[in-house]
Image (cartoon, rainbow, N blue to C red; front, side, top):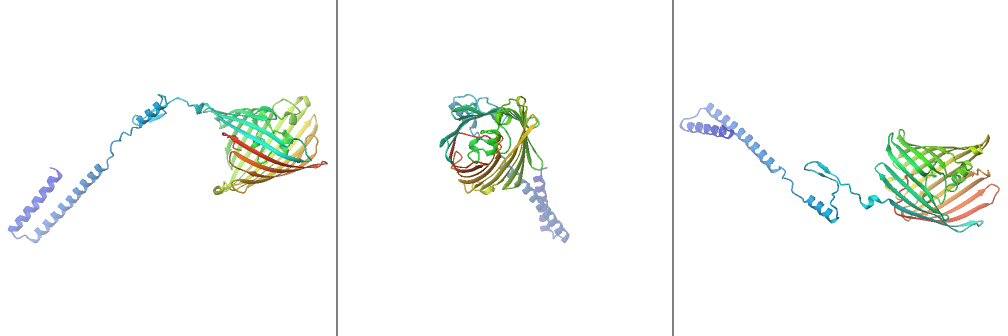
Length: 419
């Protein structure tokens, strides 16, 4: 017997009892029993109605079968319009089978190409040389060779000559989280030597870098290993073995490998402020001249850049102290040099800066001081203009004054390094 049939039978019994009561006067006990039976029947009826209502609601919200959106048809039409029978990588959600296309388009085959121009006009007192200097035109090529390696090549057009400023390949994700570079590259000594000329905060490298490394800074051909690690800050360790292009200044024309080690430490002091402190060491020899050359350096940078105003406010202070020691068969000479510079962003376009230089010339031993204030108009990420004044005083020589105007522009991507 079903639940509904049981309920109907109980109702019938109650009605029969009520009919019998019409013929005979019911007692009080019979009345109480009949009321209890009616209450039980009402409770069962309420429960049955609740069950039926829940079943109806479940049926109403049951998901409808997925409609055919025609997505596969749209993909097929797009492939036909492109003149290709291959389909992009996708997943068939009905069978969980993955389909993958192996085609490569033109953009994947071509490298990223960028070019930069750097031209300067200047007036010097006492006057000397030309007043216009097409300092450098640079063309850069960058590309991912495959998922494991990349390359960067920078050609420099300077003084009517073409040279490879940098050209190297590098691998990331190696065992031990190492990065490996091989080729020609600017070496990781100090704060600014790694930067390209047009990326500097002033129109040229600090005086100590030019005196110790040569006018183009320290670079070489060789290999480099890099490793980043954490713990009380973030730290970077770089080791390089190269044949230096600064062989004349450092090694008296020697052609033996030199060895460089650089440790850089970063600390995020607040959401708007970070600092870094680095240590550099370089060693090389020239057996023909009985020369051993050693150089050490300490660098620092402090930057304040409020996150909510990063486009309009930034203050950076940086500096380096370098020592150069040369041992010619027991005859030792030691020279020192340093610089301290600062830049402050007034708003989104204007940047003021100043730099103080000091160096002891490795050849003459004369010391030189410089003060270099500058004003930069950052027109856009592709163009900036700079005005710079230089006051220089060399021991026992006259003071030199120079006013320089610099224009730098770029086309295409120029993603070199995160300095």
